[in-house]
Structures are given as structure tokens and as C-alpha cells.
Image (cartoon, rainbow, N blue to C red):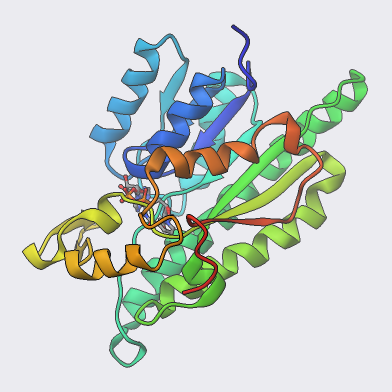
Length: 277
Ligand SMILES: NC(=O)c1ccc[n+]([C@@H]2O[C@H](COP(=O)([O-])OP(=O)(O)OC[C@H]3O[C@@H](n4cnc5c(N)ncnc54)[C@H](O)[C@@H]3O)[C@@H](O)[C@H]2O)c1
């Protein structure tokens, strides 16, 4: 059966687990060929293998999105493996929280680098490739709308105590989205954002009271949420639960399909109906 994204080339960062993994599986299931990144090479490779086992073409581009050479490497991989770029999903990320008076410069820059500077560099590196592809489409008399989806957060839309670094970076991504929607419209590219509320992933559903942490860029970063706090958060959600990674991927998918070809510069809130925090 034909998929909605047959033959498209999709690049997804942070695809080794959580929402990024589900985005990769969803786009691949609809026919896209994938270039997948994650900081953790093992989980990233597992997703690549899972896709290949389903007959979906996928290649791996592991490493941190914050590495200065990453953007060129990622875009280069898409060009060498599949000779194109149709969809870019800037999803990789984590949180490193503190109230403002305790937040160090290191914490600030680590989060801004990952959530804002890295997507900027990836899109900057993709621009010349997309421009050439768009020009070739026009010359061939084809209309092909390319799609950028940047991942933001309710914290970026409404602010969140303890997350000044993350909220600022996620708000910045929305500003970048609005700007590139204006710069890239002529190349037939839509640029949109999905801002998640509470989605149940490692980031939110690990029991923080057990002192869980993840090794991220050489640092031990605390992950998870206290279960009582999580339960309280879920009670404030109209749908009374956090979303699943599959549901989160569904919101991203909406911006990748032809039905959204004339929607650009938007932020879609995917939060189970929660309209503020
Ligand atoms: N889960 C939520 O409730 C929620 C809410 C709002 C926004 N988000 C955003 O959704 C995105 C995905 O988060 P998730 O919940 O799936 O988390 P997750 O921890 O389950 O997955 C994130 C993935 O990104 C990878 N990653 C982290 N830093 C990286 C880096 N520097 N380079 C490459 N890969 C890196 C991790 O290794 C991990 O596999 C993030 O941008 C996050 O900020 C999540």
C-alpha cells in the first residue's frame, strides 16, 4: 500500500528513544527513508535495525547535535545516502534544571546549545542543499513541498519555574521557526513547531526520587520526575494523563504530510488539552 511519504528523505535527531524514535517509526512506516541521529550510538543503531527489519531504508549518524561539525555531517549523510532532504525534525534534547539563582553558565549554554544552536546549525547547513533541490524541482515542473518540524515545549510557550535555560531555548526555537517560515517559503518549505506538554518518556517518567541520571555529553544529568509530582501534573491535564510517544509523533506527522502543505510558521501544542502551565 502506498504511504503518504513514499520516497521522502527524513532527518530526525534524538531518534534513539522516546518521541524521536516514534517519529522515525511513523515516518518510515509511511514510506520515508531515514537519516537518524542520537547521542547514544547503541539505541540509535537499534532503531535503524528495527526500521530495516521492516523493509524501511535507514542510516545512522550518531553523535551530539552540539558538536561543531555535526550539522555538516548530518546533512552530508542525507546527501550521500539518499541524495536529498525532504523533512527535518529537530527533536534531540534533555533538561538540566535549576532556579535562576543556582543556574550556572555551563547549564545555560549546554541547554541553549542543544535545543537552539544545534537546530539553527542543522537548518543553516541544509539550506544550500534544499535551495538546489527546490530549483531542480522548478526546472522539472514538479511541486514538492519540503517540511521542517522543530520540537518545542509548553515551557517555551508559557515558561516553567526551574527551567529558565530550557524555556528560553524552546521559545527561541519558535522564533527561529517564524523567521525561517518567512525566509524559506519561496523554496516551497514549510517550517513549523510542535510544543509538547507532558509526554511519558525517559525525560518525564523515570522515578526521580531514585536518583536516576543519564550520561549526556560527559555529564551525569538527573532525569525523571517525582511520582507524586507527576500524578499531580497529570490531574491538571484535561485528558487526565500524559501523552504517549506515539501520540507525540502523530502531532509531528501532521506537519510532514501533503495535507499540511500550506501551513507554515505555526506552533501546534500537543498537550492533551492543557492550555497553560
Ligand atoms: N517528554 C516530554 O514531556 C517533553 C515535553 C516537551 C518537550 N519535549 C521535547 O521532546 C524532545 C524529545 O524528548 P523525549 O521526551 O523523547 O526525551 P528522551 O530522553 O526519551 O529522548 C531524547 C533523545 O535525545 C537524545 N539526545 C539528548 N541530547 C542529545 C544531543 N546533544 N545530541 C543528540 N541526541 C541527544 C537522547 O540520547 C535521547 O535518546 C526533546 O526536545 C524534549 O525537550 C519533551
